[in-house]
Amino acid sequence: MKKKCYLAFVKFLTNVKKNMALNFCKINICKFYTFIVLGLSLLFLLPNTANAQETEEKKFDISSTIIDHVVDAYSWHIFTYKDHHVSINLPIILIDKEGVHVFSSARFHHGEATYLNYGICQEKNFKKGKIVKFNDDGTINKDFTYVDISITKNVLALFISIALLLWIFISVAKNYKKNGVAAPKGIARLLEPIILFVRNDVVRPSLKERSDKYMPYLLTLFFFIFINNLIGLIPIFPGGANLTGNIAITLVLAVLTFIITNVNGTKHYFADIVNTPGVPWWLKFPLPLMPLVEIVGVFTKPIVLMIRLFANITAGHIICLSFICLIFIFGATIPALGYGVSVVSVFFYIFMSVLELLVAFIQAFVFTLLSAIYIGMATENPHHEHEQIVEIK
Amino acid sequence: MELVSPGIGLTFWMLVSFLILVLILKKVAWKPILNMLSKREEEITTALNEANLAREQMRQLNADNERLLTEAKDERDAILNEARKVSQKMYDDAKQKAQEEGQRILADAKENIEIEKQKAITDIKNLIAEMSIDIAENVLKSELTDKDKQYQYINSRIDELKLN
Image (cartoon, chains in turn yellow, green):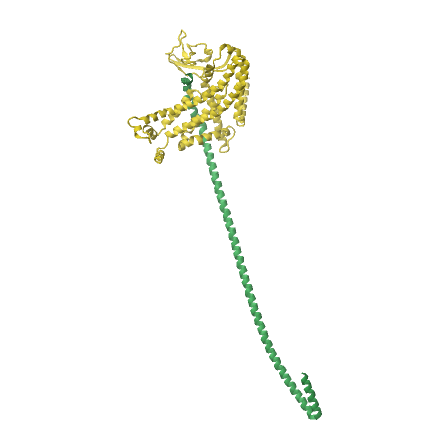
C-alpha cells in the first residue's frame, strides 16, 4: 500500500515536472508573476481582515512588521489565522563551550520561550531577533560566546534556490547533450539567450581572452542573483525569503569577487595601485595620497557591490510591504477605508512587483558586469595597458 | 541595525553552499553548455564559410560559363563572317571570270562571224564570177548561133543583172 502511494506520488511529480518544463516557455513570465502576486496579495488580505479588530487593539507596529518580513528568522512563518501561527519550524544549530546543540525552533514558541537558556532576543538595542543566551534570572548574558549556524529561513531559501538552480541547469546541460549542436529545446531555449547575453555582452567585453577561466563563476553568480531576486518576489513559501536583500549573502558574493580579483591580480595591477600612472609625482611622493585612494578603492569596490544589491532588493521589498501595510493602517481607523485603500494598494503592489522584475534582472546584470570589470582590470595584460598609456600621452 | 549586520550562520552556509554550487555547476552544467555553444558557433561559422565559398565557386562557374558562351558566340560570328567573306569573294571571282569568259566568247564569235562573212563574201564573189563566166559562156554560145538572139539575150541578161 505504502509502495503504491509512493509510486503514485513519484508519477505525479514527474508529470508536474514535465508540465512545468512545457509551460515554462509558453507562459509569459510577466503575466505569470502578476497572477501570482495578485493571488497572493489576496491571500495576505484574507486572514488579516478577519483580524481587523484585533489589530486595532494591539496597535499595529508598521516598522517592525516590515523589518520582520525583510530580515532573517528562525522559523518560516507562512500565515496567521485567528491567532494560530502556521509556520515551518527550522533546525537550530548552536556551537558553544559545551558542544553542539541541535534542536527545533518550535521550542522557542515563536520567541516566547527559552531552551537551554537560549532564546530569541526581543530587545531593540541588542541583537534583536537573534538567538542570545539568557541568565537564570531572565536577563541577557552578553558575554557568552557561541556560534549560531542555524538553518534559518534564509538558509533554507538558499538551499531551495540552489536545488532549483541545479535542477534547471542540469536539465539544460542534459538537453544540450541530447540535442547536440541542434537548436535548443524546452528550458534550454528559454535560458540560452540569457547565457549568451552573459557570455557575450557581460563577461567577454571586460575579460576578453581570459573569459573562459572566470565564466563558470560569473555565470553562476548571475543566475544565483537573478533566480533569488525572482524567488524573493513570490510572497509565500517557497518564496518570500529576502535572500539577495540580505547583507550576509551579498557580503559573501562581494568577498568572493574581491578574492578572485586580488588573487588573480597581475604584478602590473598591484604596481599601479602603489605607483599610480598618469598622476603628477607630488600626489604620490611626500604624502602617498593617490596610493591611499587606490588602496581604499580596492576595498570600496566590493563593498559597493555588496551594498548595491542588498539595498536595491531590500528597498523593493520594503516598498511592497509598505503598500500592504497601508491597508491595515487605514483599516485600523475605519474598516471600510481599509477595503477602499486595498484596491489602490494592490494596484501599486502589482506595479512595484513588475518593476521589481526589471530590477531583479538589472541587479543581477550589474553585479555580474562589475565583477567581470573588476576581475578584468586586475588581470589585464600589462603590455596592452602600456600601449594604451602611451597612446593617451 | 539588524538589517545591515550579516548573520554568521547565514554567511557560513552561503559561503559553503555557493562554492559547492559553483563547483557542481562548473563541472555538470557550464562546461557542457558552453562547449556546445562554442561548438555550435564554430559549426555555424564553418557552414557560413562553406556557403560563401560555394557561392563564390558558383559565381566563378557562372562567369566561366558566360565567358565560354560569349567566346563561342564570338567565334561563331567570326566563322560566319569569314565564310560570308569567302563566299562573297568566290561569287565575285566567279562573276568576274564568267564576265571575262563571256566577253572572250563574244569577241571570238564576232571574229568568227567576221571571218565567216569574209568567207561568204569571197564565196559569193567567186560564185558571181563563176556565174558571170557561165553567163558569158552562154552569151558567147548564143551569139555564135544567132546574132539577134545574141543581142536579145545579152540585153535580157543585162536586165536581169540590173535587177540583181
